[in-house]
Length: 112
Image (cartoon, rainbow, N blue to C red; front, side, top):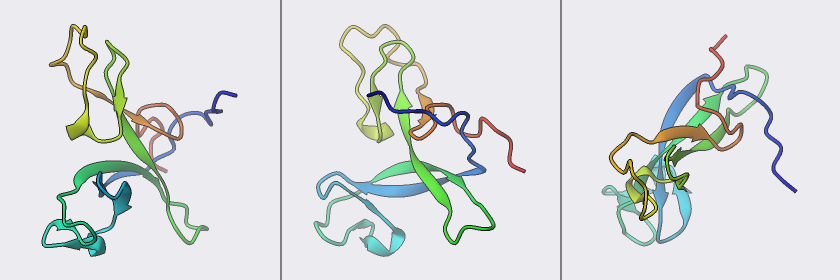
């Protein structure tokens, strides 16, 4: 069954975080030791999140951003690890940022 998309991205801001490819987990700043993953000591990659803050909620609602090539359709959660298909004609074009929750570009709706 296809994933149901809730509509435009309701994010009010973007945040950056860390991803350890070796441990396959998201890291907070406190999980870093001298700029590396505290568990495996490898350098993590930067990732981005769409963040929507709701005053009534205790924590902010956030979801990952993925990077998509409009030409070949390839996608990646980590921009530095993105690879185009071999026959992609626009390998140097900028990648689109897409909210993984809504399927639309971040900040599709203005903050209130």
